[in-house]
Image (cartoon, rainbow, N blue to C red; front, side, top):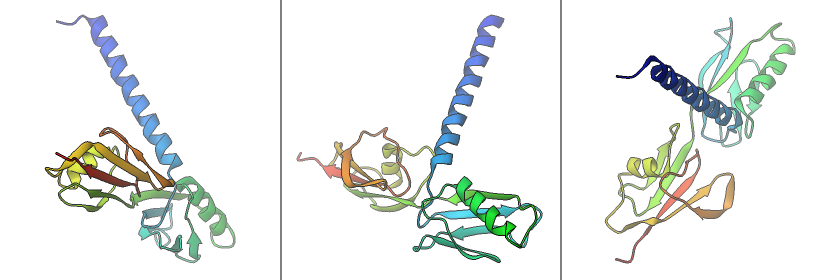
Length: 181
């Protein structure tokens, strides 16, 4: 049996863990830069005709938005897009627009090399190299778990060697090498 002090201590640890995980997620979400292939949802409070359930970022880095036409979103965060749309809507369209932008679907990440089903896959929060390989059907018999590299969309010049617990981001390319034996 646990004492009440031990239960309180465990509760505090659980709450602290939750807060830290939530803060880490919020920080990464706020830093996320929109790119081609991402799907956004845009809500304008009290204006259902202007709200957009889902819009994919075009290869030109723009989205099509009611009244405004094409709006450049490439390389901006969701908060920056909210601010931009608010400014544009204030210019003769709405008096007090309350804009919310959220990422509905992330762009693909890619796995190739010694996996059963190489290709592009939908990004999911908390994705690691190991989980990405599982999505790609697992390792082939010839795969080497020590020869895994990742080419990040943010640093497209150089692949880096990674371990199975390495975090994967949208747009990343994972290559699984083969072993000689």
